[in-house]
Amino acid sequence: MAIGGVYSIGLSTGAPAAGAPYAEIRATTSAIVEIAITLKSATPSAIGLIRTATLGTSLAANRFGGQPEDPSKTPAAGFVANGWTAAPTISATPLFLRQIEVPGIVGTTIIWTWSAESPLLVGATATEALVIWNFGVGAGSDLSLTVRWGEAFYTSTPRFSSGVQIPQNEF
Image 1: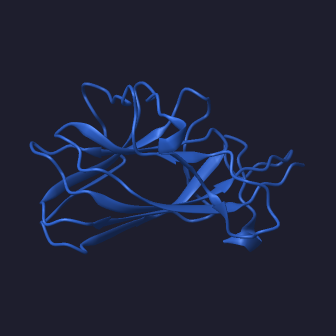
Image 2: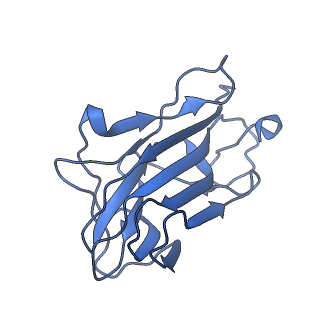
């Protein structure tokens, strides 16, 4: 059994145009338990969480690896990207996992959570990711974004159909 850890990363995003990504969450063995989003400017924003149709091509400078919450753990395999040479895309008929429209009030905060027993799995393959998306008709606010996830460990008795498990004592 290979045990992973619990990781967090906080970063800022730019203010995307309509129909564009704020950030992309990547790692095949990651299970999300929390995403916190805070508006940094007074711009009404339409923010959604959706799976990508195609992955973005991000530069190393725009990839932020999760920081282990237990400093004895290894660095995260997963990362969050906030800039691309080729942005991720979503389906032409999008089905969002979460979405919200918020007023343009600096400091407006949204927190999406999933339990450790039923986290949001990022993807089953290296070609899958999650993206925070501006589904509005205009540019969105720049955001302060925090993502918290567990990196999987595998056993012969998975709690999830994907075989991904999160250490219970770490959440």
